[in-house]
Length: 101
Image 1 (tube, rainbow, N blue to C red):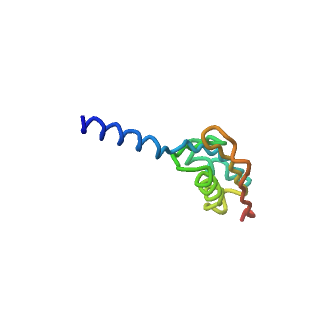
Image 2: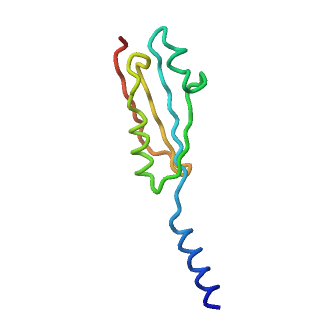
Image 3: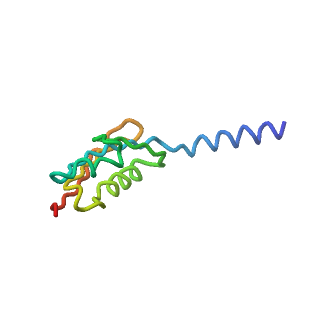
């Protein structure tokens, strides 16, 4: 009986530490003439969606903001990210712009 109660309590507690689905949509704008190179890592797709299990909408927003930063300068000129946490819009869009070289 004690084992059953312990197992039930552990299952209940584990379901309380629920991680929600964070889905971000990333739209990239390539520098002129760099479209193939810019979209190659994404199999030529644009925009792309990425999903991650996160604990809160705040964590989802931080991930979306970080994902908006352009790392491959010279191939991308603009990047826009929108996000949803458990189906609810984050209410904020993130973007980054750089000049093409």
